[in-house]
Length: 305
Ligand SMILES: NC(=O)c1ccc[n+]([C@@H]2O[C@H](COP(=O)([O-])OP(=O)(O)OC[C@H]3O[C@@H](n4cnc5c(N)ncnc54)[C@H](OP(=O)(O)O)[C@@H]3O)[C@@H](O)[C@H]2O)c1
Picture 1 (cartoon, rainbow, N blue to C red):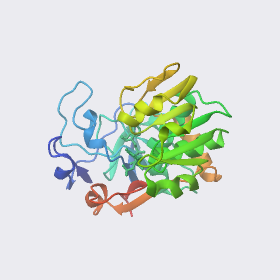
Picture 2 (picture 1 turned 90 degrees about the horizontal axis):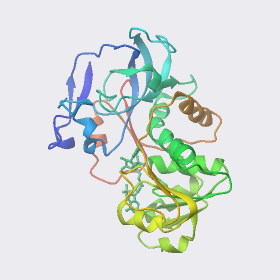
Picture 3 (picture 1 turned 30 degrees about the vertical axis):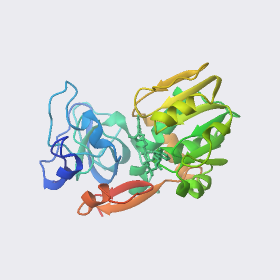
């Protein structure tokens, strides 16, 4: 099969090439999926799991890409719940070869059925950003209707999902980002927008939940805005800043079939809109996922055009 590989952490995306690889075999409780579309997160080459297996052994060269939409072609021993020929979408294991390939082996429990009226490219754009937003808002952030959310990077892949889900849930959403992101953030449902380069973040006033996708100084300043009993949720590593009278939580997104089903249902009925930027074929994938200019929206590779 054809697959994109990265060869070593030092080379990062510079060593990325399109090569021939053996097709994966399904392990216990796996499915093999013919990948129709794959998502890519720009920070993947910084994740240790891109380079090692769970015990920490080198596993290069590796196939990046951890979101997929496609069709099941084989079942591993003992696999239930999905069937050959079924359309699916979801997350690939961080520590195994990923989805920038014609086939990928994934634990079936990491996937959900993809309804026939949802395009594969849309399906591949949802798992990481949608599940991260869902889990950060509702599980870790314990959001309640009527509360306020400071959604950093509100025009980004995760931020647009955070904004839409929080607003649908009845929260007041203050989006942030760069000046050029204002219209997009408002268009995705933010009630107001703070340009982090020029506007005074400290003027925002108290919020119940900070959803941080940036970290550093922005996180430290945001922690001071959290009201008593509120939460700072970080998805960019251990939270360094803590609210004076609230919680700080950091987490890595987990696969969840029920949540994927909730998310895709919202795509179907229009409550959620995908945020897709560049779409490219596998032949053009290396250029698409190593852009030389600022990109907005999720980069999707249509593996099967
Ligand atoms: N823990 C987890 O489970 C998890 C899950 C998903 C993502 N993540 C991480 O979360 C981060 C965001 O992911 P994403 O896919 O949403 O990325 P993204 O699509 O690039 O969105 C991030 C947004 O924040 C903006 N931004 C970043 N730094 C900023 C700053 N200092 N001032 C103003 N705007 C800023 C970006 O603008 P620019 O493009 O101009 O910088 C972009 O619009 C990444 O680091 C990713 O690895 C973690």
